[in-house]
Length: 118
Image (cartoon, rainbow, N blue to C red; front, side, top):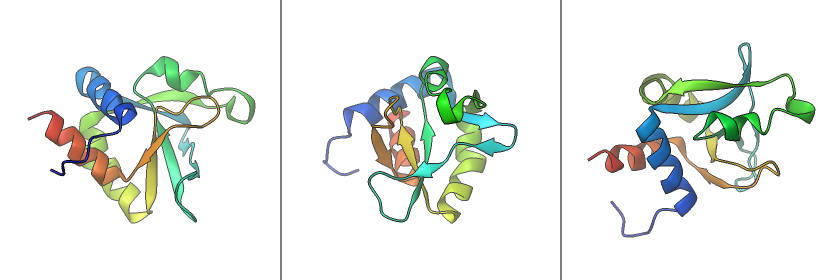
């Protein structure tokens, strides 16, 4: 692993989801919230949260019809990673109501998560 320190927001997310076993996203049936990346041109981002309450805080305005949906960490590794990578979608980590926060490649996040479990 590189000597570069992990973004504290990303590390806090990893610690929380590793402990709970769940990642939270916003869904309305089969529709998931995906937005334009703030950091990467011509790229989408899937916002993810470490708690249901943090995800719920964004269920207002244009996202009022969405609800927090739990994704098991194992499902994130087994199912979501490949799909996100194929679609070249980044993940947003614990964004606030202004959609500010860290963004990371899903495989980089998965590697950090796997390294934190060692």
